[in-house]
Image 1 (cartoon, rainbow, N blue to C red):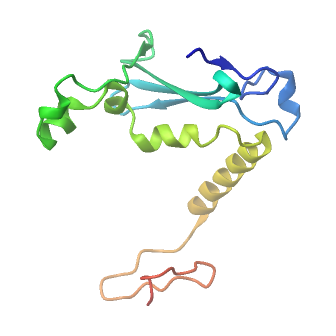
Image 2: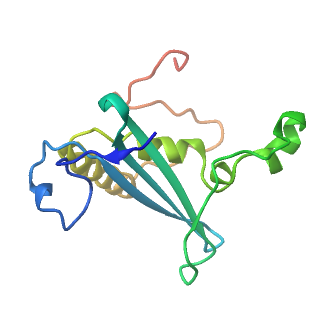
Length: 163
């Protein structure tokens, strides 16, 4: 099945002229994650149109040892003997290369942006920046031993979180 990018729809690209239209859906997202060992992971998700105009999302994961190295496409196939492996062996060696370098949560976070309006992406970035600033400016202290910590009225407590 041949997949082609959706024509005429904006994707996250700083040079795109259609980026000014905040209601355009996002059709391509690229996220680069830096690891503590100086390696990098690039996750690319893109919306495609298949047979019968069926919309699908393709994901590619790339890895490189350092910024000086070239990107290498990670395989999405598990080890050939994954069915006969124990759970511990599978976790260490059986997963696809894609899932060894990027967690399912990291991949899903990128996929989740596809189809959303560009304005929502900009609002989310501003909100995240405000939350980081608020947490840096927070002067609350960790309670000493024996003291209890009660959430403020602005922090709702959920089920199982009663005080």
